[in-house]
Image (cartoon, rainbow, N blue to C red):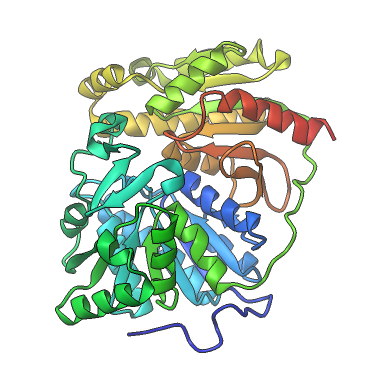
Amino acid sequence: MKHAKDGQEGDPSGSSLVTGIVADDLTGGMLVASSLVEQGIPCPFVTQPAAVHAHSDAPAIVVAGRFRLAPAEAAVEWFDQAQNALSKAGARHLLYKYCATFDSTDAGNIGPCADALMQHVGADRLGFCTAFPERGVTIYQGHIFLREQLLCNSDKRFDPITPMQDPDLVGVLQRQTANKVALVPQQIVAQGRAETRRFIEDAHRNGEIYFFFDAIDDDAIAVCAEVTRSWPAMTGGDSLLASLPSRQISMRRPIAKAPPLAAGHTAIIAGSCAIATLGQLESFRAKYPVQRIALDEAAQDFDAVVSAAMEWCSTRLPNGPVALAISDEPAGVVRTQAQLGVEKARVLGERLCAELARRLQSVGVNRFIVAGGETSGVVSAALGVSAMGVYPHPAVPGGLCVDEPHHRLCCYFKAGKMGHKTILTDLVEILREWFDGR
């Protein structure tokens, strides 16, 4: 098996790239980058593979794309561009970050992207560990739980694009790849690194290629990280990919303060239909104005809907933050998808969020709070952002993202199903404190 070369672990020169991370959306990528920065590991956050070379003096880089929902062929094409850019910049260890809840379907792209990763690094095995115990996501006997429930019994079953109906992630992954998938069960992981390594070696001799790790707590995550630390590539969710680089990289720096930002307005763009985001918008509405935009109306007259939304904003932005939302309740999502079609509704929603972001920027909004992974991708692209610095904040998951090198705007990318009820209101206050209260 291909391992990291002697001397590469834990001792980067300070100007060479050790770990490259490819994330399938911006919210997940931001969380990993923020965690590394919190550990003192410099980690630029870029959204285009072409931007990697300008940051190759960092020990870690996150390249966050927007391919979670893309067809497998298109996803692999983008993934290849990212991993090629990272390898060309000198990355010795490649990580693939996907959603902790393994958002995918039988036609999903996690398996194909993993296949491309293993071929790229020349490995003979690859690991998967999607658990995020801190957020209540655990894996037991190959099945995914959200706190005490199987994920298929949670609100995730209402996801408009990737409803979770099968909690057996080993089975889900096996339907996406020709490589043989094995479970590394909790009873093995609980016995520690040596026994876990023996189990994997035995399974590999029997033809197993992909290894899906049970993980019910942080101890299991640590075992997984130690067992796979010398593998040239690994895949997983936030917890594992936030801990693996610390085992590879010795460089530590103090956490930098966010740079100054010009005065400007704050706006929320919400595209997520997650139950958590809907509740957060209602909490925000108690203090600030919220305008919901109906996709069926935008399908009839896109320009008129955008113009009306901007007219609504123009009378309110001078008085404080506003929120524009295409988010809808599960029943409303079903009606819209039945009327427009699932793909047309998705594309229209993304187009609408992108146009709203451009228009808001043109009227002086330079602080964006974006709810939803796909929405975050289209908004960052619409704003012309390709590289950002991440600045963690203790009050919210992840951190504030300030565009590099110009420091023109700040974004917070919120995963749809994450965050406490008042996070949107709290973020408004955090942005005001960080940039106006200096």
